[in-house]
Length: 601
Image (cartoon, rainbow, N blue to C red; front, top):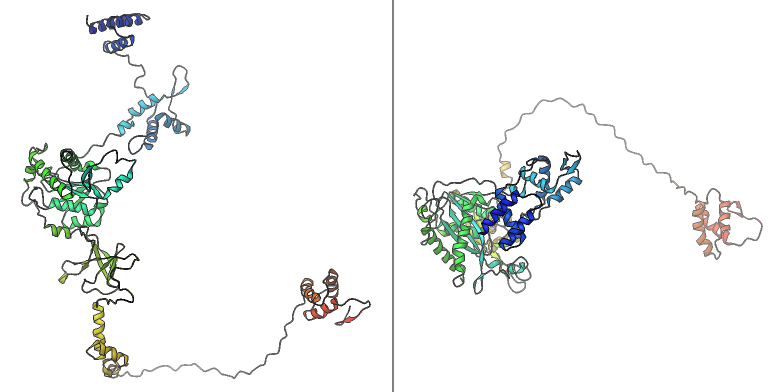
């Protein structure tokens, strides 16, 4: 008898067996099958689940948690979620916190006793899921809107991504070993920051055609425009080219830079920047990055490492040309190349030469002031002596070109007859170890005169004209001799004397009644001498003046002297009596009374 037959027979017997005999049936089945009792129970459970479905609870589907409380609990749990989607607060902890803060009750009424009982965590989780607040339900992505393009070159999408496998070392491209490059060793990433390979993928939305371009260092406006210029210009080993009508890309510093916006505006391209975190808006180019990683970069691991940026870009063009021409696109039913070749002459706007496109990659103009034939732009100094017509103190518009390899800037000067501005290149002026500008004249050993500016030339011309001479030296000599301007023949009052002024007739008026006042000479009055009265000294002030005088006379100042002074001068001591009274206090008493200063002592 087969094992399946034994299990089915035992399951039927188990369903009809009375209470207390199920263990005997399971043990008998285990003996027949030669397995443990636990294995027999497990096999029986799988069969009995189909023979006798579990009885539904009488209160199944009943919810004791209100929607408001479920939302409050779910909101607290979601508030603690990390950006990675992990680390959320457990539901039971969230319930305890909210109960303690009287935000929720999360209780039910026991129908048998009529008392309130707290809901279990499982019941709360079921209610949260029922109301649609569970973390799995909230993590579901929003539906994406479908986009379409009417023809090739209507919309291009571009996206930058770090090559996950390669960076250019001295001996060629290297795979980033996980044992060296991981979060615990950020210094290793810093060492190769300038050698990291970045990949720009560009796709045509209508045909799905793919172009890619590798750059070094980081995502920047210069690298972005280099990749875009590469895709726009017609190449012998490529198909997709031209100026698109629309360009879609992620938000970022390279996109928001004035250089990028000026370039696309000069080319007549409308820029579409998707919202932050909504990479699905340009899902086509995101998928193109995946195709490049799996079909191109994965294959590079089987060959010798590339040694230069030019080599990997050459290989990338070979792969893109073959992939576009041989792989059928599922949406169009043809290859990507054949799909792009459906473009009509009216839809294909040819891009100008690469040199012309590179000149358009300029930043927003910034006004700068000319100081000593130099301008300061973004913290650096540039020489503008080669720009015609500039004068010291003049404000000029300065722009930077992201694709200039020498780090120079451009000074915009008006063109002839209101034409486009002319760009004059201004090289950067370096500095020595002391911070002095390179090329500055060394004091005591050399002399370097600044070139003559238009303002200097105009001043010299006017000086020669006013001094009526032909050379600058003669003009300086005439000015030193204090010669009058224009030879002294210029009469500055002649136009006033010869002015034709019509005579004016007198007008009738009314006599004024103003009378002159009577003026009497003032008599001199001699002021009477005024003697300032000096207030008497109080007893403390008197003691402060008497003490040094008494001690100078050879006696010691005592409290008895203070008492005699206060008794003799109860209303205060006159200032002019200080010295005389000090002499009296310093003289020893012989008895009797003496008359001092009109008083008895």
